[in-house]
Length: 614
Image 1 (tube, rainbow, N blue to C red):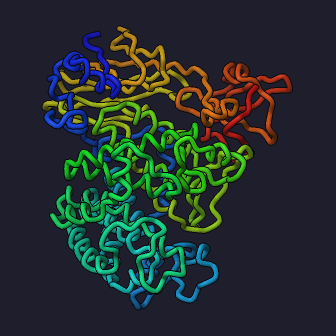
Image 2: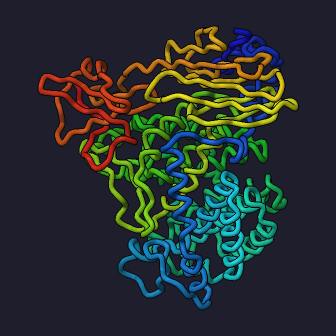
Image 3: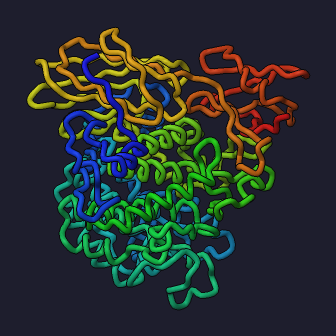
């Protein structure tokens, strides 16, 4: 093999102390690896770049099905129904049927707020965002036309009364910002920034002057209704900074700074957890704002807050990568994660939580080049949202993953809940989570059958990924080029993949776990890369205090026991799990066999994530 080397955050840290970083990746200067994270006089390496949505074609059936199903559903939604709450809330005529559920506006409803009218119009901006991202993938004229029509119909409704008539003015504004900047970026809407400017001018007088924490009252006249304290102004900075980065104007940089939730970030930046009792999804989502503060303002404090916050969340996560049972974060070392296995079925707010998790790990991976963030993203993808129930046309939404000892997949009882907004965005974003790039080449983050196309120093390159991973250990890549070219392919080797190897044109070398393995060479048309990631069974305890309550994992997959009871099983029996089909396993016990399935294979059976072992 011409050049296979590795680079992990662990080695990155060691290189500062040992002064050995120049040899970690051939050709990198020592100064480029000792970043501002560890010394004020050292320049940080440039973050990895994202590829465009249209640069990646996925060949994976479950990933593509999720995109196609959500996209088709959004395309079929009535535009009058989508605009109805906006029109009603500003006193306009509002033809068409109500969508119902959370999305509907009903000024007279006071008794069933969580069923009807809880957050009217709240997912509109997310759906426009998802349609814009889908257009960047499929280039369908009908998709772009729908985006432009929805933006112009929405623009006719902009008015302050909307923000007075909703309990979530900041939340809804944030989603509208996202939809409009994505319309500009991905669908080429020439009016998107003008509509955004009018939206911002109208919304600001109805928003708090700074980030207000969840549960704090700030709106006169609503002190007795706790739901009016659940708005999420502390998440807005991310999209405001992105608006600035995409050219919407300096005011969005200033607004992004204005709404940074430093009451939350300061302790995290100092390495102190203040997560206990906070709303799970929105506060993990707020860590995305902290990374964008680093990318926009160069603020090291906010990057430290995001990294430490992620570590605190990871330490209280389930084996699936999900977190926040009952939508609540816990203190370090808390027994509450273990207790949730019997106390709740609301274990992880799945589409919303995975959307926040994917963004945060994507941003942090780009900045730090730490392969562990890719491991975490992969685990959440396969064990949560990829196995969610499909969004239905009547607004039924898969909201919570259930890690109870007696778990099931069920729909949320309220229609058009917030997760109906994030699932279509998640389905589009698999592409931009799979590959990244820098000036010297490409980083393969997720192993999903796909084709990536890009230009490297004037050469047209196609990298096609094949295989049955994560059900089989072998992954293949074929390289096609318009002419020979020198560049690097960096391959994420998961931390669990001891004994991994990488081959180029049949020449094999061992690859260390927990790193990006770099293969840098003069590539020729038809070159092949093979990656072997040994899929050895292992168990993970729910927490250190309950070492006998474990989940079984093979590679990135949690295997769920399909059972109506609580089977008696030994640790050694779990570790001896036998694969019995393309995507199924069996564990033999003294009283019979247990069928084990990945989350994507669970349908309406009762299952358990964790087993108590002897």
